[in-house]
Image (cartoon, rainbow, N blue to C red):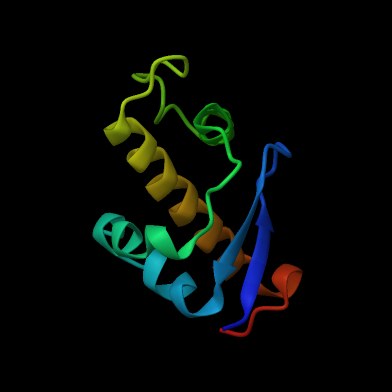
Length: 102
């Protein structure tokens, strides 16, 4: 399966996202459970959760309730879900930038 490389705008990390999950993780309506289902298809190895937090703080105030120095397992899952959703949305919004065919 081909993977699309996505780098967050702040240069905190790069993800390799399987092409077949992009539309499933960013669509009209609720995407949370779709992202949770696909979270293990992404390699998060070597990505410090504080980098996920920093990435999302660049997008909105979603992470204001979280202390980046004391993240729970639930916080880390939530960060991964939101990053995956943002990444897939970016790829869908800018397919030519990623050589992605919708």
